[in-house]
Image (cartoon, rainbow, N blue to C red):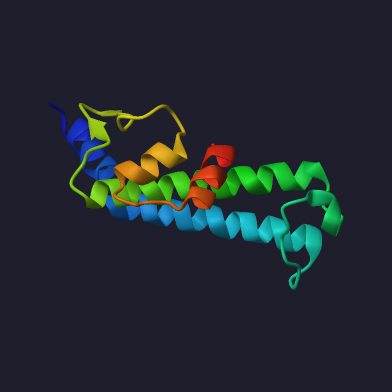
Length: 122
């Protein structure tokens, strides 16, 4: 195995970078929210309630969902699992972007309300 493959696997299986990317995605979503709504705005479930156009609301939700996925993968790795093997990223034993299944694989027990939200975000 090459040094490049080994380095990729080591980084892909380290929780730290996944935490870092997750946090950065949340910061990006917050910046988008503040740019559109102002620094004191509170996000609501219905975009029209605060005058948020779907052009901003959708990408903001996508960034938050991607952040959740990264953070759940970090937790999954914290439990001793792997995501990178042979220089390639592997999916955990769940469908792509299945946040509810990933939360359970990460050792979390989402409430029914949170599980429903995760299903909607995926």
